[in-house]
Length: 388
Image 1 (cartoon, one colour):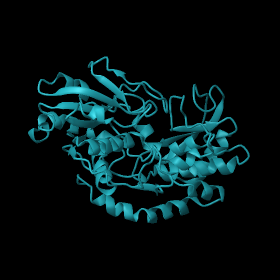
Image 2 (cartoon, rainbow, N blue to C red):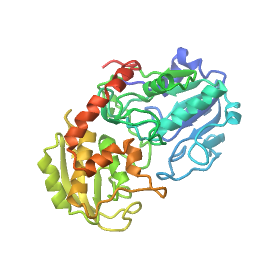
Image 3 (spheres, one colour):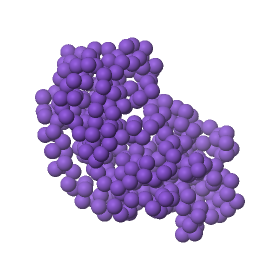
Image 4 (cartoon, rainbow, N blue to C red):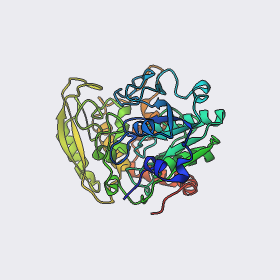
């Protein structure tokens, strides 16, 4: 059985000393629960020897009711009665005044093992604030739902492409737990926080989420299932295009489409690629919000059939190339009002978009990214806390 960091915090004396008799702040959201689905915030609030004084929430809010990219207001948490400070509104770090009110700041949020998930940078910014304030920072570790063995995708180019969906030169899929990643951020990028990681017991790097027997709680509104998590590292790149990534449907990221796509043609082209451990089928949908809201879209749904051969990054980029080359007159890369390509922020570079526009072979790009990752992989080994 896998014992989560939030469970060991209170059951193991070596970890409980971090919070016993102290004023505790907690960065969390609905995914911060134990295997009995009890919220860490509620458990700490009820504990006689812990004083929970403040909550901090990332994108989507402490209770997870805000949609993608929507700013969240600070408030008082209705459940615990303590201040619930938004770190996804006017600011993204705790203030010195807030940290003056806590003796230790905890972090308990489930990540999905992918570079552009914003919770990672809520964590690193909170670590920076704690380092400046002299407040210990404690990560309650959780499994990487993609496992801890495989590293995939290109490395972000820093500092040119640093943003809130990528602050550090790490690959798309980094193969670390959130606690291991915190250690890497802290030591390799000079944060210098007084960092403590409450390690899991019983987790191995080869485990996927279902191997843990822990219920899956969606960490964000558009990450409802483990099937979504499995495809997200590659399919999220459609966010940077005028193709719907499935937001506003029952299968976000598992299906993509647009009014101009012929789903049967796209499915046939994808099938001809012979992508391992995956099949696609034509789909038709109308997003209830987001891109092409209320319009009939055609495209494909990606189904993972199992096995170790599935590569979400490779599969997603092959589908992306099939769309942009199959419908060149209609396909577009999205830009923000400042003219910055949203895709480049996700990719952490402009060279990927330019290579796809120039007709580059996707497998050649994949091979180049593998070579470029060697320095990161050497760095990553220094921060592994769990065996295979």
